[in-house]
Length: 607
Image (cartoon, rainbow, N blue to C red; front, side, top):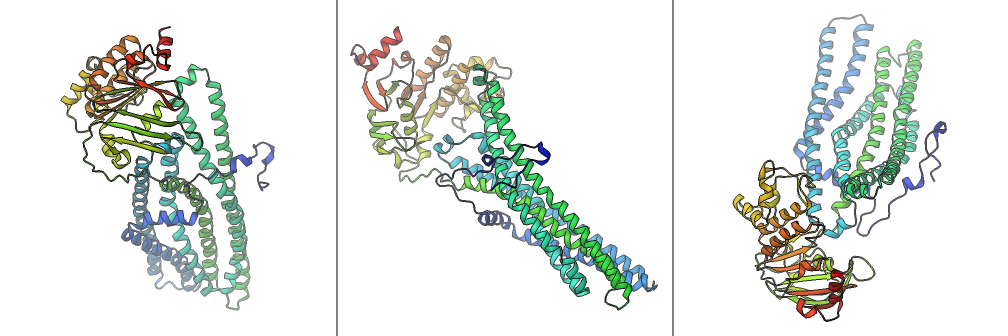
């Protein structure tokens, strides 16, 4: 199947079947359909129909002028130069100059306006993809590399942009030029036209042989780019872990392997695509030689079938006839690459968005009465992560979830935030099934403080204000004071206007957590979800965070996940999770000394 791939001159690695194999089709992902992809791109372009029609008219005009130019040259040769008549010669030269000047202006304007059309179409495609990212459920991002998704947003869309900028006009112009040139050639000399046309079957066979291979290779290349970008993003994000475990060599080997796959696919894609201009140039020169040679013989016979001017026209048309064929062949490879990129983009845009079919009012004010009724959930096919979970937390109470890693604590949080919906059972808030509450209503009244707080590349002020975008500067500063963050913020170079990097490398982990708490305070939530908020923090900083958390939790329904049991001592209720089930529940004073799981965990922590 892949016997066309060989090692030239014994030095180039062979492209493997692994490089070209199709990825497994995921559920819900569209099958390959290039016609559909092209139609969808056309719809984006067609939205600017008036300007597009203007461009097409200019393309038709420039194609006509490019055909008229050689015809006028031949006419001047026959009627003036060969005949030795110069009356009106100057006027014809001026007309010829005007034709080529008009051609230049038409080509400039069509290119200028087409760039605007293509960039607006790509802008809509890019913003559409990014907007769709925001509507996709969390589970979509859980099963994909972030770098690979970024590659679709950048590399794949850029391929579409380049094709629309360069190929659209070229393809349309080539077709018009080809048809027009052929019509003029037939009218001038059917015999020389047939001679010129002898190269077409050879061109068609060469193009078909090449594009049959490049189509598959361009798709493999785009896939390799996405995989490599995903690996780069992953390794840079996890650089501390890489260094902590001295895995630099392994990471470099993995990158080299993915980069080598991209190099191989890119090498062969460009190698096969590069055959086209060479073959076309060879056939073009052959057609030129045939027309000049046989046309010259016919002209010398003096039978009137062919004139010197006709030969001049045909030698130019022979090149002009093969040039659009050459351009079409080259652009076909570019279009293949763009289709491969667009197909990957549309595959994401066709993913099912996070639907919100809730029937509740969007302005519902929650009180924070949360109840789980026999809830079961699994992230994939197979065993449930949590099963048979039932509990109730009343407004203003703090509930702590403890248990071993993998016991299902975080899953409870994910379900409560509606990142996922339960497979069985029901979750109610204020007696309303959570599926009947609009997600925006639920999440706008919920705040998260996570183990690894995420900061944006923005000022400290804007990072805190992210909890509620309409918060005033005074409200942000007040929240920072309540979160015990104000003092360290004021010691930064520009205070609240200090610009933080995306990973917040300028401040400590504990300081990041204080900013995260301040962000939650600004949001003024009804529900508060704390997931390992004090893990990996030194004792002094933990005391500051604990104090800030107590202020944050006051009067709010709070759910706390913690491995450090001293962080849950003030919880109203403690739920002990084991193997996805609720093993124990009760107040701390009731669980201590009971001999149950929590009592054993507490004694183990004291040891």
